[in-house]
Length: 274
Image 1 (cartoon, rainbow, N blue to C red):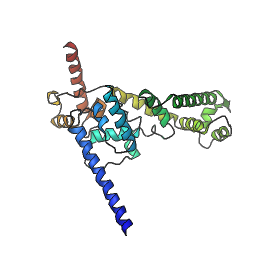
Image 2 (cartoon, helix red, strand yellow):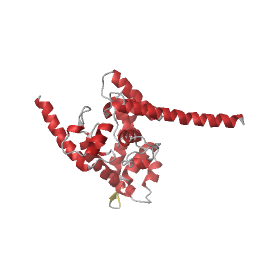
Image 3 (spheres, helix red, strand yellow):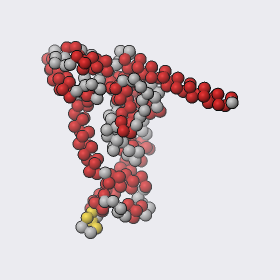
Image 4 (tube, helix red, strand yellow):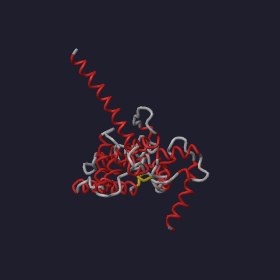
């Protein structure tokens, strides 16, 4: 009986602390002066082990007067979580489903190192031993891909055979002791999903144009001509850091983004002239 009561108490305390962390998050995002997206990611509370890491990295970089680490939605699930909380608000419990990520085909467990190791190196989280191991893996992947694309069988390259269903190329390669399992897995998946990944990369490239358009944190949305009243209210509340992030806010239309883009060009020209 005592054990059941203890377990029940612990579960309730866990729920309590989750609520407290959400309140802290709201305070950090909407009440602290640094409400722009570029700074607010540094204040994300311990919603998960990964957000602990992001918060810690950005806290250290802020002390060092460096730009914060802001991951894109095409780079990590934690970036999707943070971006959703910043642009969609917190009016219900948040669960990180893979379906929330529009680029989930690229957010795979097998390519996590290829997505994030270089970023980790740039912020000082990857030591030389880890970096050399990663570079060696990339070299092995490139060498295996080159071999498959330049070796032909029955008028097709082995790479093309690997892309076909029910092929035996991967099984035969697995028998080679010089080819590591993680390298073979990476190459096999890249081959099978080559067409889909290429299409997704084109979409990512288009979105990066808007991601690169920064919105000044002190922008007065009430002065943006032709911007709808509802859009002004939401943008002023959420304070997005980029045009792409503004476009993900619920209720913001493509027309609102166009109006905002025109205003930012005028704003930038005025700043430059002054």
